[in-house]
Length: 51
Image (cartoon, rainbow, N blue to C red; front, top):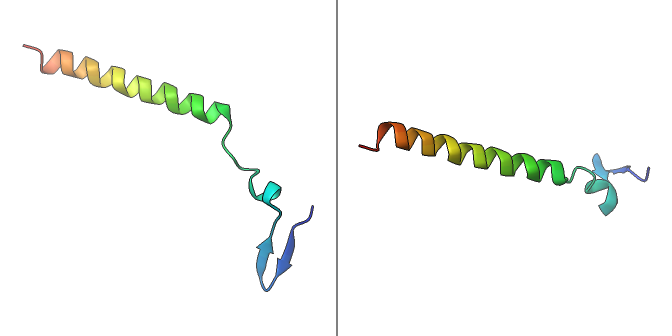
């Protein structure tokens, strides 16, 4: 690990700093949750506002 401390600050290489980057599972979770939110709103609209 090349993590060092300089003047009470942690200094990392660009690769170490990017290790928390979201992967495809985060994108899938976002897509699924957005789709479910749209589906729920559509059901609510049909039940309450479609007369």
